Length: 221
Image (cartoon, rainbow, N blue to C red; front, side, top):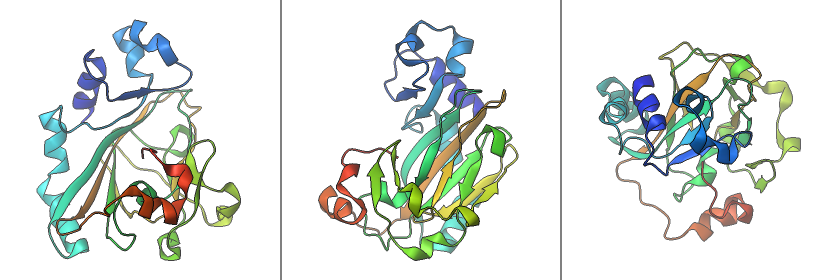
């Protein structure tokens, strides 16, 4: 996974790369090594690297997803979620379902795979256990498209450190986010979202936005 992400970052012909705001337009002038510690997100990724595509189709993973969903899974979204040392920004609290044009009762599952050791200080996943049972939450365009800070149950936050290769599966209504990195250590992760193969999308985004909030028009996970 790491080799695939590295190769994509160092390519100069892709437009699927989002860089940290602290880097901005300087990105194209950076050395290769500096580029590796400037990117915050790439989406999609499996279309451009067979190694990453293979990871998203690992038999052990898809078999577990089929047990959870009750039918074979289909990949809905694939991305790299990267936190560069020192400048990696937070991802505020949110529900991934707020970004997907599927009925809110669709069993969409996120697979978050750590490529580096993922710790609180370099931006590991934070969750509110059991929060997916609360249903959809209104989201607002503030630091990102996010759950209102006052709606976050701070006393229930659980940090989920992972070793390299560790994988977290979570329901897409789960409240989750990642803190900013002030560490000297890079934190790279892959994130795949899967839906049941038979799931049918909503016929337009307005239905989703009527549930999660109109601030989310054109928002990307």
